Image (cartoon, rainbow, N blue to C red; front, top):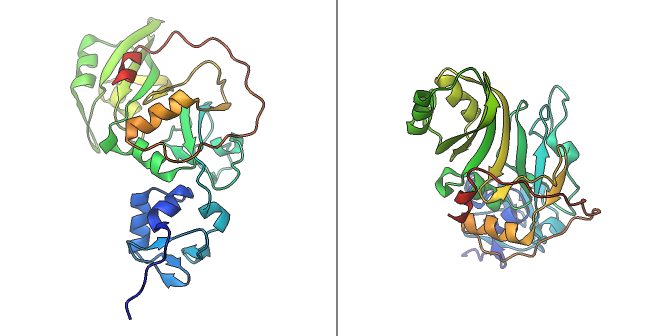
Length: 281
């Protein structure tokens, strides 16, 4: 007898909306037989709803989590020293210790920053949104402010923009703009399209320079502004939300959730990024 698939949404979309990963990641889990619906191993193409019993790796996914359609996105100003991980074996502070509690589901970090780096991190409960923001295919650019130890020559900048061979393949900055400092401590703003591990630091090291400070100041259309002090967070504004969905080609088809907190005291916005012109792309 032919098996009748459950009614409702496609299973990978339902689980992605619950914050359990991107649709592509969840398709892989379904294909591997790690997802069950009502006691039966699911197949790609199956549908389910919050009324069904859904299990991932034999652990039930709560119905209220499956029923959640609210989308949350916040920006966080990471200080140096915090780890971008849920649990650190050395029990160091993590960014997740400082995030607000979601009504349901869990936060997904959009990219990472190493312990010695600071600045803008985005967090969402939407696994599909997080995956698209990080995937090289979507070409979402990131901007960093870096302080460099040692002399920086025009030839070094040319190499960084034209491409350098790293151990995991070629890499390059889209643009490098000097932004202040004196002597052997000069600041630069740079734009990169990828998020490989320690890529910014490794690129500078490849041309004989070292990074003494590194701070992410922009991710796609989202700019870290002066309202968000180090170690603090804020929800994105409506215009920022629209821009974020637009840059990755997602429809604004889910209600936006709001976190309960006293509004932050506003302070003047910064004068802007040297690469602000990119936001209109």
